[in-house]
Image (cartoon, rainbow, N blue to C red; front, top):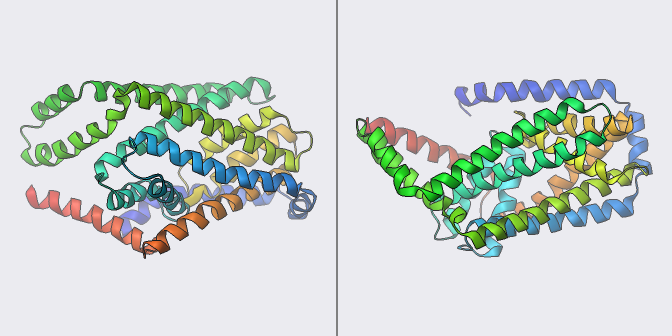
Length: 338
């Protein structure tokens, strides 16, 4: 890893380590162990199974955005590879990684796959903001969080609207780009190719039936997540209410978006555990629950992701080096043509 990459990682490293230190200073590890001992393992087994079902539905979400131009098997396994890479590689390279890996397994180009991931992630933030904002009025002491969630959700809705406008006005967008970049031939040539493929990828938003299917699968996927988070809370807190699932899910989603070490180490535990502490007043049990979620996440994405990588004769290190080479090739090509 070069010096620039290390500098970019530094803020996330500081945030993660600071939060980990703060969490460990507040929780009682003996109480954490006791929480693990008293957990309802029958419910935890149900939650684990729901997590696998959630992954399978998420595969349908992504395949719909891809307009079913890749098989479900390839889409699902590549999705889990991306989640696995995100758990271990910096800068959420798993998102680029799954675009790169799927482009090698299908007729889709990298720049056609990438917009589908952008649409998926932006929509995720809209859903998480809506769920979080809807739950905040029922949670004592979380009043200020509602405005934050609404602000994020509003920004993401604007982003979705902008992507929809670009998809509807593809020719106009290309004309504007070419007119604005005619003084820089290299930018016009390279950027034009990327923009054209990117806009082609956004074309799914022009198809009303595909869009309806995408939002339908996405709604089901987030509904499953609410149930999963509620049952996970219930496994540790017998007094848990369904609203706990909504509030903790929204908090966890925002925590995962904060700059951090790979896998949202520290930020996930801080946001998810903090939400549960606010709901229950028991921070040690909340930490145990957050650790359980992390273990489930690693095992679920890891089992399928490692299987997929081994089937392709790849390792996490191989993919990381290929992504770096891809980035370096693009940079060298741009410098050479200037």
